Length: 397
Ligand code: ADP
Ligand code: MG
Image (cartoon, rainbow, N blue to C red):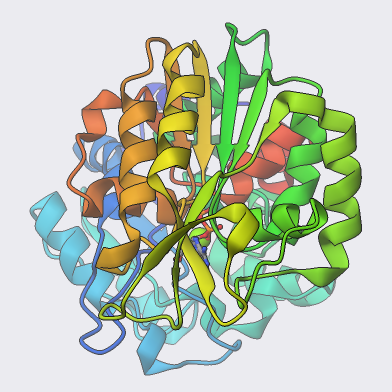
């Protein structure tokens, strides 16, 4: 896989370079303001290096999940503004993805200038399962530049036009962020220092069962919290009230628990509330007695203590998925506690996942205390599962 330095060594002054970046930041539902700009900041090293080398930079990115057509709610306009502030230069936003305006704006770039294309998912072809359809869009991306840099680590598990197909059409290299992420994930997979502890949380157990399956033989402990713990608790025979439950996964969780022995560690207590709200009365109960009319929205203090003990002796830690609904103040303590314990690890600590990384920053924790904060949730998990990621495979050729 060629690196950005290989490209810079060739000289890029005056050349048009298409950079696929991961600028998929969370926005406030009502004001559309960016609530966490971590991914934009993570894309700066590659963009700055290209600008300083005199490249004419065309940036492609997605935001959220629009339905394959322009939708102002998902416009990259706030991202273009923030990117411009951080780069210290005007970043115009093309009115389309790879149409007339994109062509015109890319054509007008001077050396060191940057233009952002509109949300690539405004084109249905971006995520199409049909190779020819994606190829048509990729041809238009390729016409905007003569070199491709993939720096969108959070999207490398997607076989999308701006990630995969465009790399088949242009000389390509991996950006700095992709290189850093790969380096850390390699350290997690090749002979990690032990004890190796993985902490999983977040909302969807079905998304993460494959990674649990793949990691179980490799880890010393797997701590499970967040919304996904309730399917495991149900598999142990506990009532989980109105908590998040994926009934069709209970059987799989039961088998995993049987296989894992004491390596899977589940919560001891949970913080419950009758509804999903910031101003409800909460009760903390042992997992054996979750009331029928309540939902578990965070792990309790005894759990934080128990998870902390496991993390205390660990030499390698990977954490993905918040322990509770950290977006609401009454359900932050679990995530805060585990985040603190992960930060204190004496060894390699890696935080993966968009929401987990956002939680670290929103809760005001010191980012520097972690070995690495990954921008990619799904991508990191699929890598750790040992799956081939299309966006990386295509860069390797
Ligand atoms: P990441 O982006 O870090 O991979 P996920 O997307 O899997 O994490 O999950 C994040 C979401 O999980 C958060 O929005 C959080 O509110 C939610 N969550 C955590 N615990 C619970 C819970 N007990 N019930 C419902 N949702 C939860
Ligand atoms: Mg998420």
